[in-house]
Amino acid sequence: MDIEEGLVYLICFLEEFFVEHGMNAGFAQYLNLLINLVVLTLIILGINYLIKHFIIETFKLFTNQTKTTFDDFLIKSNFPRYVGRFLPLLVIYKVFPLIFSEFPDVLEIFYKLVDIYVIILIVWICRSILRSTRNYLKTREEFNDKPLESFSQIIMIFIWIIGFMFIFSSLFNKSVLGFAISLGAASAVILLIFKDTILGLVASIQVSVNDIVRIGDWITFEKYGADGTVTEINLATVRVQNWDNTYTTIPTYSLISDSFQNWRGMQESPGRRIKRSVLIKQNSVKFLDKQDIEKLKRIKLIAPYLEHRQSEIDKFNENNDIDKSLLINGRNQTNLGVFRKYADSYLREHSAVHKEMYLIVRHLAPTVNGIPMEVLCFSKDKRWENFEYISADIFDHLIAAIPYFDLKLFEAPSGDDIRSFLGEKSNPPSN
Image 1 (cartoon, one colour):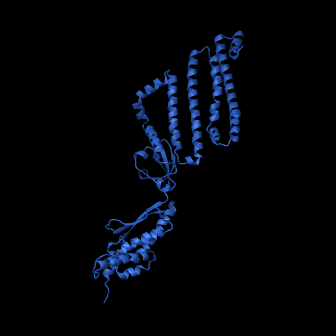
Image 2 (cartoon, rainbow, N blue to C red; image 1 turned 135 degrees about the horizontal axis):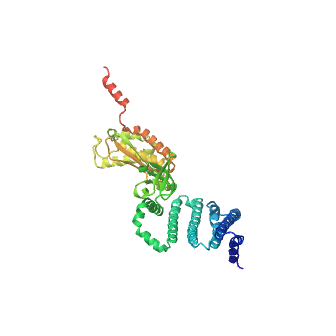
Image 3 (cartoon, one colour; image 1 turned 90 degrees about the vertical axis):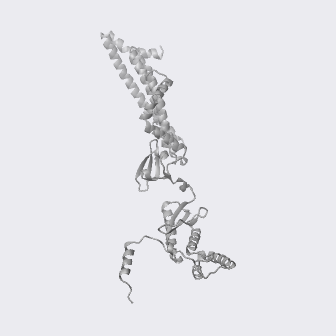
C-alpha cells in the first residue's frame, strides 16, 4: 500500500465505521467530512507551529552567524514565514482533493483558490525581498541620497499588476496574454481611474533617472511653501522638512511640471555665493584732487594702487597737455572708483572668501535709490549659519568704510529725519 492509498483508507475509515454501526450513509459521509476537516485543520496548525518555532528560529540562528545584515532584514520582513507557508499548502493540496473526492464542484473552487493563494504568496515573497533590499541599501552610505522608496514602489506596482493578471487569468480561465489584450482595450478607463498614480509613476521614474532630486537635497519650492531638506521620495509625494522643522508634502509630478530651486549644486561646489549690494547716493560721487588722494593713501589696502594709478594718470595728462585748472579735464580718479577697488582688495584679503572662484565688485545701472554697488564672491564655508556670519562681516566693514571715501549710503528718510528737517526749517539760526 502506497502513501496515497493509506491516506484514502484513513479518510474513509470513519465513514465506513459509522455505516457499519447503523448510521445513515449520507449523514455518515458528511460527519466523516467534518471530522476530516477538523483533523486537517489541526495538522495545518501543528505544521505552522513547527515552522514558527523551528524553521524561523533556525533561520534566525543562521543569520546571527553571518556578517551581512541583509538576512536580518529578511527576517524583519517575514521572508522565512512566507516561504514556510508553502509546506502546509502542499499538505492541503495533497489531502484536500482526497477528502472532497466526491464533490467535484468544491474541488474546482478549491483549485482556483489555491492558484490565487500561490500567486499572492509569491507576490508577498517578492515584496519581502524588495523591502529587505531597500532597508539594507539604506544602511549603505552610497545609497543615502537615492530615492529607494520610490524605486521599490514602482517595482511593487509592476509585480502586483503581473500578479493580478495571473489571478484574473485563473478565475476566468483565460490566458495571461488574452487578459492583457482585453486590458488594453479598456486602457482609456484605466488611465482615467489611475491618472494620479500613473502621473506619479512617470514622475518618479523621471526624477530618479534624471537625478532631479535626491534625499538630503535642500530645495526651495515657493508654490508649496517648501524650503528645507528632502527626507523622503516615494511614488506619489516628496516630503520636505523645512528649516522651522515643519513638513511640506509635494506631489512628485510637480517636480517635473513646475519650477523649483535645488541647492545641491551649491552644496557640492567649493563655495557658496554671496551676492549683495549697497546703494550709494549719486550726489556724493566726485573727482579726487591731490589732497584727497594723499589722504586716501593712508589706507593700507589701496595705497600701492593709488600710487601706481595716479602716476599713470599724471603722465597721461602731462603728455597730452591737459588743463588741470578744472578737475574735470583729462583723466581723474573718483572716490567711488577707489572705493570699488578698496572693496575688491578687501575681499581678496578676507580669509573666508574663496579666491579661486568668481570675485567681482561692480556697478549696476543707477536707480532712483542711488547707484547699486554689488559684491559677488563665494564663501569657503557653505554652512548656513557661518555663511550668514561671513556675509554680515563683509558688509559691516564695507558700510563702515564708505564715509572714509566721502561717499554716502542711500536710505529712505525716516520719521525722525523728517521731524528733524522740519524743526530746522521752523527754527532758523539767529544772527
